[in-house]
Image (cartoon, rainbow, N blue to C red; front, side, top):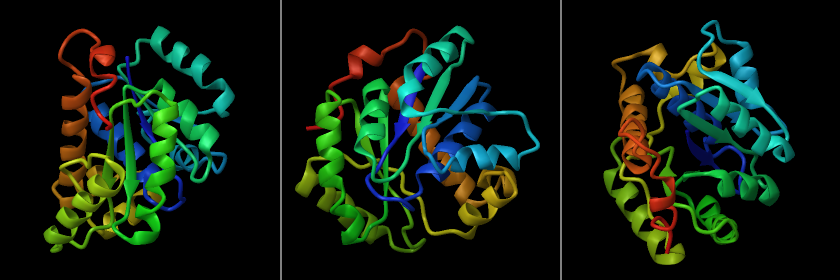
Length: 225
């Protein structure tokens, strides 16, 4: 089983959107998938309550129960566990990062959010520097240069790599969760669906999902400076 943690030090950055988007992409690819909802606001769990499809599974738990939940997932032969976390909680983020084969950090390209990456970098160091990538979110659809500049700033200021895939500001990201769906389900051919699929493909490439034995230990220290 591979584990991906979605963390950040600010609410509203798109952590749950990324978590459920990846989970649905994983399910559609044929992988047994669970979202572990550590956020006290239970946003992913509430999304699941509005959902008619039984997959992916969503399990709400306090951070103190993360390891038993992940162990139960392993016994259930889950392929991919995605941990959704709260904003502004070092303790929850640290537990999630320590358990992860890969950490994704959604962040919008404004200085208020980018400055929070300093605290995220501290969490990653305490967690043993798991592979980690910033996922730029809320980019204007025509602002490719903005994304490139933000990636350079994040690398220069914090030594954090950014995912080559970014998510644009699109109505599907806000509309789909209200119906218990994700953009891939709302509009399978839409641009938001394409972005999430590319992010899932990138995730699979990093953790080697679907490519044989577990490679988590071999990539454990390759992601952050």
